[in-house]
Amino acid sequence: MALVNVPLSVRLGDENEVLEQKLEKLSNRIRVACPGIVQSFDSTKQTVTVKLAIREMVSLEGNPYENLEIPLLQDVPIYMPRAGNFVLTMPVTVGDECLVVFGDNCIDSWWESGKVSNQLDYRRHDLSDGFAIIGPWSQPRKINSYSTDSAVLRNLNNDSYVEVRDNDINIVTPMKVTVTAGSEVEVNAPTVDVNSTSVTVDATDVTVINSPTVQVSGASITLAATSGVVLSGGGLSSIDAKNFLNHVHSGVQPGSGNTGGVV
Image 1 (tube, one colour):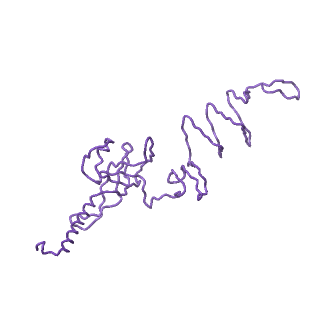
Image 2: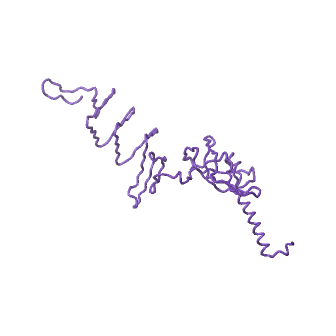
Image 3: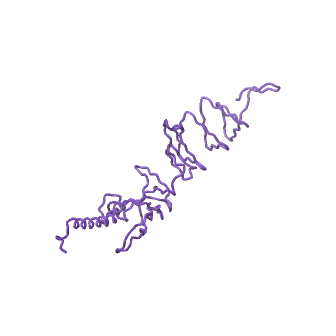
């Protein structure tokens, strides 16, 4: 039957169907973003091997649709917050969830040189050009005790964290920074300055300060202890420029009188 004998509505319907089939075929080839699961991490290249977490529904050669797993994505660059001379890094482990975002063009030349480069291949939105944004999570991996009124850098157990709160009339806790550690806090620096109107150190066991020289200065210094204060040392120990370890007294006399002052 000649095309001119086919009603216009039928011809338009056929053309629309053909166009939709072409668009569907094209959209199936375009990759935009997909959740994935990390299979391995290369800490030297800072890349991951990723299994996409959504199977592809395809029909091969007119056969019924079936769900097929996409082959593993190899050497996928990772994303971590980074700018200037600073970067926030976290240990990437097998099983971590991520979002793989696919580039518009082939990224190979940029990936090798870090410069504006020509495309080595004319592929677009291809599985080979993904970036793994580490962090998105599914419901089975949701975070317990999520804070809704502060910024927190923490572990998942929530027993080690740095928390920053801001002033807000709706928040009972005032602005402060809290550092909590499950076992130990270590500070290493040539110089550590603590400037505050008030400093309190509470220890349930022992407080140890090891230093070649310890200087404590203030308008008033009070040492209080329920079982006494012990000062020990092999060198010169003085108060108000007077030696109180290896010292002598003046005005010594027999009997019940007191000695003179420290010499």
